[in-house]
Amino acid sequence: MIFDTHAHYDDNQFEEDCETLLNSMADGGIGTIVDVGSSIASWAKIEELVKRYPFMYGAIGVHPDEIGELDEVQFQRMRELLKNEKMVAVGEIGLDYYWDKEEHDLQKKWFIRQLNLAKELNKPVIIHSRDAAADTLDIMKEHARGLSGVIHCFSYSAELAREYIKMGFYLGIGGVVTFKNSKKLKEIVREIPLESLVLETDSPYLAPVPNRGKRNSSLNLVYVAEEIAGLKGISYDEVVEQTEKNAKKLYRL
Image (tube, rainbow, N blue to C red):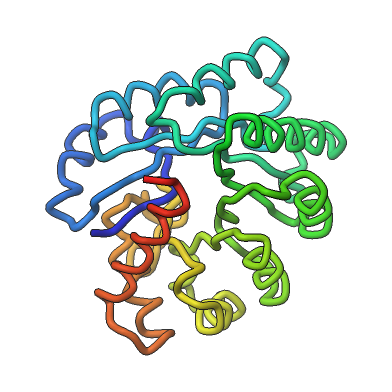
């Protein structure tokens, strides 16, 4: 079944129909979902979701746009939450120079602290990197040695993709691969072995064609898997089976 490695059902956009939607996942071919932390406010909701739904797991971390909220008290809380066996990764963490909400030095500081926490707790990491390719790679080379994880919503070059795969990371592929203007990503998906790719939605964001612009959900991963199958000239079932295997290895499930 399809494994959604990155979603945000803790988001307010799911407030009204979250239960109905999540209860429909099995019928839609979705077997497992990881709900990923982005802000401190998301953590309690993620705790609740993973307790309530056996097929859901969580990740705890702070997105670079939200690291202004972090302090030592919250960092200690993060450490404790990550000891829950259903919290399978530290994330999403990284750098975002597109929105530039937080100072770059502050982003780097908390990125490194969260990478070190992942090492301490022996957890994989979920990396967010937007318009920050060089700094992300430099930090990863110095501070992520020995870690495993996924580069979420991969958007850089084929050369950088190969670099991360050599480091033992997966590439997260979602709705963007179905967009007509995503030629670079389509080429990367053609070139990179299926064994290095995982499926993700970033729900409620980045819905694939034919639902682009609408609220996204894990049910839309069917379109992403179909696109990957077409790009690689393999069957849809092969894509679903291998990416599920990859995701289970990534999150040690």
